[in-house]
Amino acid sequence: MHPPAVAGEDRLARGRAQLARITGSSGEHLMETLAEVAPDFARYIFEFGYGDIYSRPGLDLRTRMLATVAGLVALGHAQRELEVHIGSALNVGASREEVVEVIMQMALYAGFPAALDALLVARRVFAARGLTDSPAAP
Image (cartoon, rainbow, N blue to C red; front, side, top):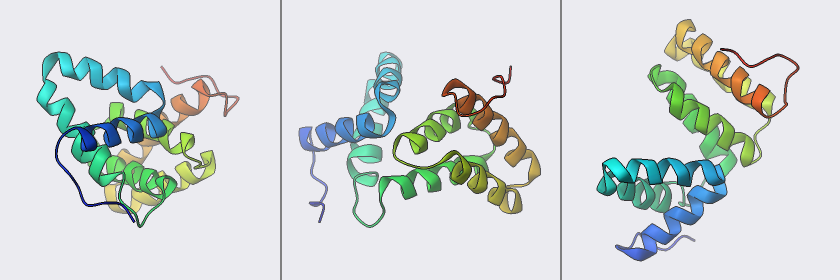
Protein backbone atom coordinates (compact mmCIF):
# COMPACT_ATOMS: atom_id res chain seq x y z
CA MET A 1 0.00 0.00 0.00
CA HIS A 2 1.12 3.54 -0.79
CA PRO A 3 2.37 5.45 2.26
CA PRO A 4 0.34 8.46 3.35
CA ALA A 5 1.17 11.71 1.62
CA VAL A 6 4.19 13.42 3.16
CA ALA A 7 5.40 16.95 2.74
CA GLY A 8 8.55 18.07 1.05
CA GLU A 9 11.09 16.26 -1.02
CA ASP A 10 9.48 12.78 -0.74
CA ARG A 11 6.33 13.98 -2.51
CA LEU A 12 8.36 15.93 -5.05
CA ALA A 13 10.66 12.98 -5.81
CA ARG A 14 7.71 10.57 -6.02
CA GLY A 15 5.91 13.00 -8.33
CA ARG A 16 8.91 13.45 -10.61
CA ALA A 17 9.40 9.68 -10.84
CA GLN A 18 5.73 9.06 -11.57
CA LEU A 19 5.61 11.81 -14.20
CA ALA A 20 8.65 10.30 -15.94
CA ARG A 21 7.05 6.83 -15.83
CA ILE A 22 3.85 8.16 -17.40
CA THR A 23 5.02 10.75 -19.92
CA GLY A 24 8.66 9.94 -20.57
CA SER A 25 10.59 13.15 -21.05
CA SER A 26 7.74 15.32 -22.37
CA GLY A 27 6.25 15.88 -18.94
CA GLU A 28 9.52 16.95 -17.39
CA HIS A 29 10.16 19.40 -20.23
CA LEU A 30 6.70 20.93 -19.80
CA MET A 31 7.21 21.21 -16.05
CA GLU A 32 10.56 22.96 -16.56
CA THR A 33 8.91 25.41 -18.93
CA LEU A 34 6.09 26.03 -16.47
CA ALA A 35 8.59 26.50 -13.64
CA GLU A 36 10.03 29.50 -15.50
CA VAL A 37 6.66 31.24 -15.15
CA ALA A 38 5.20 29.77 -11.97
CA PRO A 39 7.62 27.53 -10.05
CA ASP A 40 5.20 26.99 -7.17
CA PHE A 41 2.48 25.83 -9.57
CA ALA A 42 4.88 23.39 -11.24
CA ARG A 43 5.82 22.00 -7.82
CA TYR A 44 2.12 21.60 -6.89
CA ILE A 45 1.57 19.55 -10.03
CA PHE A 46 4.58 17.34 -9.24
CA GLU A 47 3.70 16.88 -5.58
CA PHE A 48 -0.08 16.72 -5.58
CA GLY A 49 -0.91 15.58 -9.09
CA TYR A 50 1.78 12.99 -9.64
CA GLY A 51 3.23 12.43 -6.17
CA ASP A 52 -0.13 12.00 -4.42
CA ILE A 53 -2.96 11.33 -6.89
CA TYR A 54 -1.30 9.41 -9.73
CA SER A 55 0.70 7.40 -7.14
CA ARG A 56 -2.31 6.19 -5.17
CA PRO A 57 -3.15 2.47 -5.03
CA GLY A 58 -6.48 1.24 -6.30
CA LEU A 59 -6.12 1.90 -10.02
CA ASP A 60 -3.30 0.95 -12.34
CA LEU A 61 -1.73 3.69 -14.46
CA ARG A 62 -3.47 2.48 -17.63
CA THR A 63 -6.87 2.89 -16.01
CA ARG A 64 -5.91 6.25 -14.49
CA MET A 65 -4.76 7.56 -17.86
CA LEU A 66 -7.91 6.40 -19.66
CA ALA A 67 -9.96 8.16 -16.95
CA THR A 68 -7.82 11.26 -17.43
CA VAL A 69 -8.41 11.20 -21.19
CA ALA A 70 -12.16 10.94 -20.54
CA GLY A 71 -12.07 13.89 -18.15
CA LEU A 72 -10.10 16.05 -20.56
CA VAL A 73 -12.51 15.20 -23.38
CA ALA A 74 -15.39 16.23 -21.13
CA LEU A 75 -13.73 19.58 -20.40
CA GLY A 76 -13.73 20.28 -24.11
CA HIS A 77 -11.04 22.96 -23.94
CA ALA A 78 -7.81 21.20 -23.02
CA GLN A 79 -6.34 20.00 -26.30
CA ARG A 80 -2.70 20.47 -25.23
CA GLU A 81 -3.25 18.42 -22.08
CA LEU A 82 -5.33 15.89 -24.00
CA GLU A 83 -2.48 15.37 -26.47
CA VAL A 84 -0.01 14.75 -23.63
CA HIS A 85 -2.34 12.39 -21.80
CA ILE A 86 -3.34 10.39 -24.87
CA GLY A 87 0.37 9.83 -25.41
CA SER A 88 0.75 8.96 -21.75
CA ALA A 89 -2.12 6.46 -21.92
CA LEU A 90 -0.30 4.74 -24.79
CA ASN A 91 2.96 4.85 -22.78
CA VAL A 92 1.41 2.93 -19.88
CA GLY A 93 -0.26 0.22 -21.93
CA ALA A 94 -3.55 1.54 -23.31
CA SER A 95 -4.18 0.61 -26.91
CA ARG A 96 -5.12 2.93 -29.74
CA GLU A 97 -8.54 1.25 -29.81
CA GLU A 98 -9.10 1.81 -26.08
CA VAL A 99 -8.28 5.50 -26.41
CA VAL A 100 -10.70 5.84 -29.33
CA GLU A 101 -13.45 4.00 -27.44
CA VAL A 102 -13.03 6.21 -24.36
CA ILE A 103 -13.28 9.32 -26.52
CA MET A 104 -16.35 7.99 -28.35
CA GLN A 105 -17.98 7.15 -25.00
CA MET A 106 -17.58 10.77 -23.97
CA ALA A 107 -19.78 11.89 -26.87
CA LEU A 108 -22.70 10.79 -24.68
CA TYR A 109 -21.65 12.99 -21.77
CA ALA A 110 -19.53 15.79 -23.23
CA GLY A 111 -21.22 16.08 -26.61
CA PHE A 112 -20.21 15.26 -30.15
CA PRO A 113 -18.14 18.44 -30.69
CA ALA A 114 -15.91 17.62 -27.71
CA ALA A 115 -15.49 14.02 -28.86
CA LEU A 116 -14.80 15.12 -32.43
CA ASP A 117 -12.13 17.57 -31.31
CA ALA A 118 -10.58 14.87 -29.11
CA LEU A 119 -10.55 12.35 -31.96
CA LEU A 120 -8.64 14.84 -34.09
CA VAL A 121 -6.11 15.28 -31.28
CA ALA A 122 -5.86 11.48 -30.99
CA ARG A 123 -5.30 11.24 -34.74
CA ARG A 124 -2.28 13.55 -34.43
CA VAL A 125 -0.85 11.53 -31.53
CA PHE A 126 -1.38 8.24 -33.36
CA ALA A 127 0.20 9.59 -36.55
CA ALA A 128 3.22 10.91 -34.64
CA ARG A 129 3.72 7.44 -33.18
CA GLY A 130 3.17 5.60 -36.44
CA LEU A 131 -0.05 4.02 -35.20
CA THR A 132 -2.03 4.99 -38.27
CA ASP A 133 -1.49 5.32 -41.99
CA SER A 134 -3.23 8.70 -41.96
CA PRO A 135 -1.12 11.86 -42.03
CA ALA A 136 -1.20 14.06 -38.95
CA ALA A 137 -3.98 16.62 -38.88
CA PRO A 138 -2.89 20.22 -39.34
